Amino acid sequence: MTATKAPWVKHPGFYIREEMEERGWLQRDLAFVLGVPEQGVNMILSGKRKISPSMARALADAFDTDSDFFARLQLAYDMAHVEAPAPSIAVRGNMQSHYPVREMVRRGWLAHADTPSMEAQLARFFEVTTADEIPYLAHAAKKTRYEDRQIPPAQLAWLFRVRQIARSISVPPYSESTLVKAVGELQQLLRAPEEARHVPRILSDCGIRYVVVEKLPRAKIDGACFWVNGGPVIGMSLQRDTIDNFWFVLRHEIEHVLRRDGQDDEVIDEDLAEGPTVLPEEIAANAAAADFCVPREKLDSFMTRKKPFYYEKDVVAFAKLHQRHAGLVVGQMQKRMDRWDYLNRHLVKVRHCVIPAAVADGWGQMFPVST
Image (cartoon, rainbow, N blue to C red; front, side, top):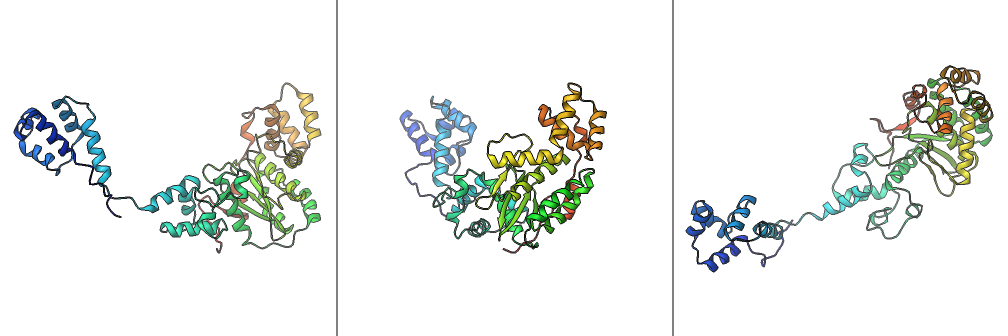
């Protein structure tokens, strides 16, 4: 680092001396006015001592000028003579402003290194040749298709981590007929939260790469569907750890696979629990997911018969009759009534059942991949 060259910016002592000359004051006169030792005044006039905020106020009173005048002179002098910061600071600031780089380092997605190495790692992470091609960074040579689709940077980093992991795992060739049968098998698991542990195996047998990655800060995302080497990938964040959200998001992404969505552009789903949608493929996936969690006609009939009093005992009995955990029924009823506090105690957690059986990254563990 080198010092900034600005010789025309004088130390405040230079301007104090000019004020003294205007008044015909000596050093001892100014020391008398300020009530300080003459040696202290000499140190300021010779540029060997900075002006403190309290001294700046005192000098302003002594010379009857603006209270911030001498403080601004000192600041201007300090800024003009401070060492120039390393250029890498601006580069790191730009990276961190767009991507949670520090968190990515903490999780082991990137290795802590000097700035040029960090840029190179980030370029490899996003599968581009140079730092100039990294999406969203201010120096990017041109907009990428991800920016055109307005995918937030933190979501994009999550998506690329799912892709990175998916490429490192092996599954049999994808079979659509096997997946159709598997949907029926998955329905047999809806009675108890611990049954979710079978999901990774069932999907793998169908030729689906199932990857769970903890979401990054500022990345609201439920799941994604895309294809790698001719086979489908389902990524989930499990950001809402409830039994209804887990099964709804899973079946939603399965429907995308069955429709062969995500082959050209990745399907990224966020806020599936509450967010409205108008895209035909999302409407179809939502309908399939809702019907999977609770048969819509059966739930329509139940809610019509019980309206306006939906007692807990009736909901539990209805869930048992249709071989569902009560949390799945409650989840669908919450959406229909727009009452997100209704019988919340039935929305039990399932993440702890899924993570041990899945290819997972996050929550204190890192899935090793070769880059």
